[in-house]
Length: 237
Image 1 (cartoon, rainbow, N blue to C red):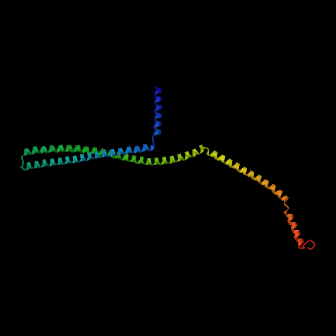
Image 2 (cartoon, helix red, strand yellow; image 1 turned 180 degrees about the horizontal axis):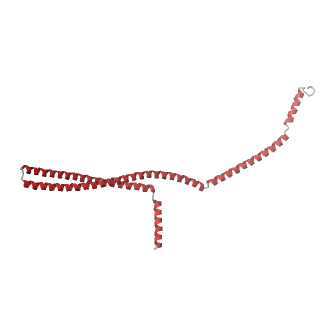
Image 3 (cartoon, rainbow, N blue to C red; image 1 turned 120 degrees about the vertical axis):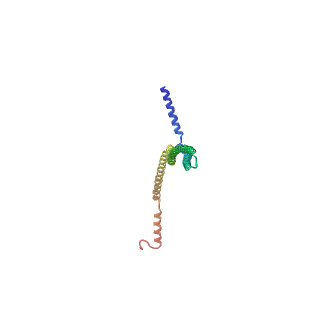
C-alpha cells in the first residue's frame, strides 16, 4: 500500500509540474477576472431581486397598516352612531367587533410584512458588501495584471538579450576574434620583416652607387677647363 501511495504522489507531483508548465499566468489572471465579473453580474442581479422583494414587503406593510387604521376608524364611527341612537346598539357592537377583528388581522399582516422587510433589507446590505468585495478584488486583479504584463515584457526582453549574448559566446566569437588578432599580428610582423629586407638591399645598392659615382670629378674637370679658357688659371689669379 505504501508503494502505491508513493507512486500516486510521484505521479501527482509530475502532473502538477506539467500543469504549472502549461499554465500561462496572464491568461489565468484574465480568466479569473472574467469569472469574477460574471460573479459580480450575478450578485447584482440577485441584489436587485432581493431589493424588489424588500420594496414589495414594505409596500405590503404600509398597505396593511393603512387597513388596520381604516378598520379602527370604521369601528369608532359605528360605535358613535349607536351612541347617537341612529343605529341599533346590538348591530353596532357586532359590526364594531368585526371591524376590530379585521384591524387585528391587518396588523398581523403588517407585522409579518415588516419582518420580511427587515430580513430582505439585511440581505440587500449583505449582498452590497459582497458586491463591493468583488469590485475591489477585480480592481486589484486588474492592477496586478498590468504589473504582470509589464514584468513579462521586461523578462522577455532580458531573456532575448541574454540569449543572444549566450549564442554569441557559444559560436566561438571570442576565440575567432583572438585568432583574427593573432593573424593580423603575424601579417604585421611579416610586413615589417619584408620592409627590413628591402631597406637592407637598398643600402647596399646605395653604397655601391656612391662608390662608383664619378660625377663630382667630372664637374671639377669642367670647372678647370672653363677657368683655363677665361685665363683664370692659378698664376693669373
